[in-house]
Amino acid sequence: MNKILGLLIGSFLLVLTACGEDGSEKSLSKLTTISWNEIESEAENTKVRMFMWGGDEGINQYMDEWVASRLEKNFNLTLERVPMETEEILQKLQTEKQAGKKDGTIDMIWINGENFKNAKETGLLAGSFTESLPNFNKYYQTNDPAFQTDFGTEIKGMEAPWGKVQFVFHYDSSKIDSPPASFENLKTWIKENPGKFTYPNAEDFTGNAFLRHILYANAESPSDIYEQPLDKEQIAETADKSWSYLNEIEPDLWRSGEHYPNTLTELDRLYSQGEVWMTMGYNEARAVSLIEQGVFPESTRSFVMEPGSIGNTHFLSIPFNSSNLEGALTAINFMLSPEAQLAKLKPDYWGENTPISIEKLPDHMKKAFRSVERGPSVLSQKKLEESFIPETEAAYVDWMKEQWFNEVVQN
Image (tube, rainbow, N blue to C red):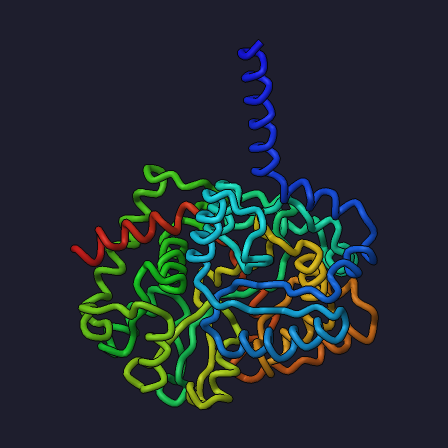
């Protein structure tokens, strides 16, 4: 009898444990079956906490001054923005998961790429929710391949597209008449202008993206990289050419390559002080606000090189233990709205491109989007679209970090 009772108690405890592990996902599933009005109603008079990278003042102002005020006014929903590196956000969620914390401290996160892959694989996300977002289904091309995978990882509705960016180089047109058109041209330019170019190290997101451009440039075709999972043997020849390229330019880099900027902020500072004549970044319009703030010279312009400019989509997602699912869904749906996307496109705050489908918008919004002037430092939409090349799968990021250190830093 005691043995049977023990087995029953044990089974009961296992059921409780299982419910605790996926309780949030079940709650999210239930929420996605009720009316959207009910979700917004439940979000009223609550606070939603968004943890996100906070290293760009324009982005922070957009969130604090534009998004937060309208969430408060339109939905009586308070947005609390908590700045934190994405890797640290995932570490915090992992700690909460291990501690069995069901009512988490994070309701929404800004995420993509390798971080999304890690979050999905370790069960740190609440589950699929995009099908329930009215704005996503009304104004976005929901079957767009860019919304199906994120750096090669299947999305399955677990994150909503918030913005898209392309990698561009910036240069001072008062010092450079004509920027290089290819990476071979860049190598020549660096040789002719010693000390005036460098790039962030491979640990930095921007620096790593620069290295992936080098890899694309040395492949027979960029698609040989971005259409294939990482196969070290298959790309060995391309990789060798890439490390050779980087070692060849190193002696003529800023400080002769003895120090690489640790962050994009450090590289931007070198550019703003005139120590280097080029910088770079994963946002084709990021120079606009920096010029207005007097950080970058007014003569700053942007360019891309053959074989193209890597672009990607970034997303909003909900952690597994969000304590305000209704607030998170309401905020995300609003941040995907035409009004919010238009404000984000304008250079007043952020100035980044939008994943919204312009053709799905009402006529007055189509006109508003198409009339946005992004300034002379931003390449034309036609040029950006012509030069766009997709991202690799996430595995390349860590591989590039390791190989760059071994093949370039220690060489």
